[in-house]
Length: 383
Image 1 (tube, rainbow, N blue to C red):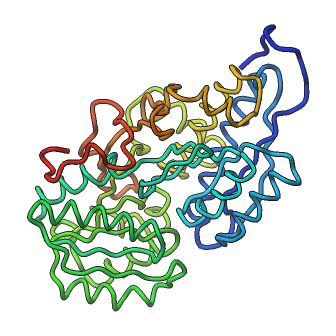
Image 2 (cartoon, rainbow, N blue to C red; image 1 turned 30 degrees about the vertical axis):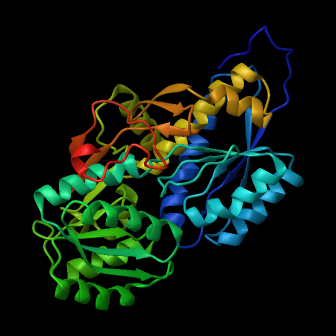
């Protein structure tokens, strides 16, 4: 984004905050979000920055500790003079940052799927909400595998709220939830063995997982070790990406399902370039994923908006970004002006032996964000 004569020239950088964990149990996915953010910033700077000024990232590592996200957000805004922050994976970390940006009038760009039912004038949400992933996933699972579901999740707000939505979808369409269990965020592999035995005993048709972080690998490994078969009783997830499949082992992840707005295998010119640039930088065996991709496209949306406003003022940025579009790797996305959430694509993928997902369903275009499920019918046929 080159300089423009409409604005007074300045060489001072645009400073933004970045809050993703490079250490701790969430680093398996947040490290990739950090990479997506920094790649986008570097690409923009290599093209001359925004109105002739580079973007400068002030990066902190919260170490997967919820309280640290809020503390670092406050440091960014009070001490570092930053008003725009890219960050957070878990809903707990977002909720730790939320009161800070609301009180100090900052703008958090949040690139992670989440449970919905939230609105803030100080947040731009670029991950999927339940109407963009859970509804279609539930429909596909009940059609192909059956109506007996076992829910397993990490013990915090996102899994419990996502399971609440999925439970309503299942029950309102003739299904049953035969079990529901939550393990601590830091759960180790030994804690998943008795859980998978319990699941096996309950004989569900589908295991719906909202386990996150490093524990995701332990769930799938325990499933694999106890001899369950994804062809008959798969794990279906909203949170298991290419990053977690790589960590658990390609043979362990094979055959399981994820609903996501993006997979590395998406066939677009933008994605081919994105994957190529990412692997050139981090290695040919490094996969991309939906959270990385959202982190990447939201920085580009921010930069295009900043080019118009020539100001980091939160109200100006938010007003200007409403309705903005970007040709993201997943396809064309936009910020829904009603909600401040992204209109993203709906896809379902089945993991293969190469650590990638074969896309078995995709929407014909981006799906309008409906974080409060206002358009949600009591039957899947109406969704």
